[in-house]
Length: 293
Image (cartoon, rainbow, N blue to C red; front, top):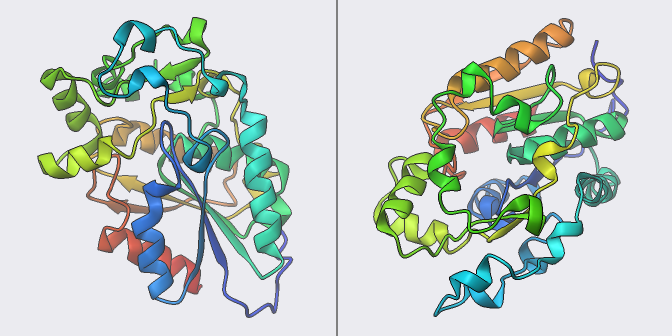
């Protein structure tokens, strides 16, 4: 049971809309969008509220860092909710839909927003794509999946060592990507970047943003069978992912297929760590194929 094709007979090419993950921005997919655009595909990456052009970098985060101030400096992102994320993406999807079909793709925590948008406007989406992303079905939110057996091998604790404030107090998960502790940087590399060179890791760290609303991992993000469950979906497994282990990615796929047996997941695999990079040729080929259908 898939969503009604409201663009039947529409031969216009689809727009691929990308949603970034936590502590990130549209820059995450910039190289991917460049490659797909050069192949003739319509693409756009969304900066979620408080990210990218709206990103917040505490004064205490700058060099020389004030670590005591970094743990207490207020953040405007503390007031941002999942509803704000959904509103931003829905607006982009509606505008893109005027020009033809829309494929909505999310990476990592971006999967939370993809699912919520799928619940809200299933009739405007021709496919949802999860790229090593959270896809909550049986459990209510990201936080619940962090305690599952399938997540036991996650190296996320190596990243949270860089958290410099109590999210419950500050309202954001504030990560010091500029930590001077080489063991912290090495842990981040192991969790996120796998086979990246040290130079590539340095470039990555300088694109990541310190603050992410603490409410997002706690927000209900379950895909609903009668809305989200009607949309054709693809899950791209990252087999070298150490943040969302392949076992947890497989659990997302299994739960989704059990919820919507008449709309099984199109499953692909790419030998990549959590952050890609997203212009890996095999990932570009998958997305180009989906756009050409």
